[in-house]
Image 1: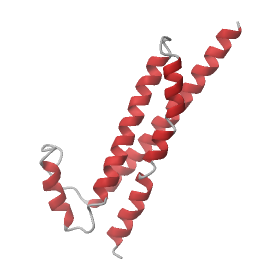
Image 2: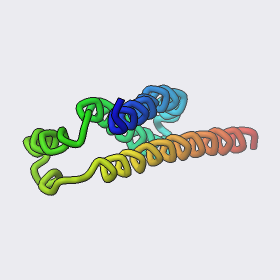
Image 3: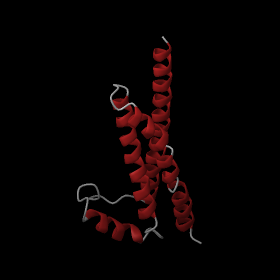
Length: 133
């Protein structure tokens, strides 16, 4: 098995975690829906949509990395992507650049999920403290 194929398989396995990220947004979504008329729901909703944007990007990258099997596929891949995103794929990028971008996207997804949970827990704590008083 070539190095590129092994790297792509490893990347795809990690990118498949978008399912877990999306599932972990469900408790904060329930909180958003239960606090819909409170001001606290707006930042939670924004963080929820940001996290789901990153989940969508991870899902998309998982599918797109399945198309890359060797270095020769990069030029054809770029031509195909340029049909939809002409400016973004105007210059050729190496596989290392693509992997770096995917790694950045993966960590942004994790951070947005953690921030969503942190803000959710702080919101619940705040509401619990204000209801006690």
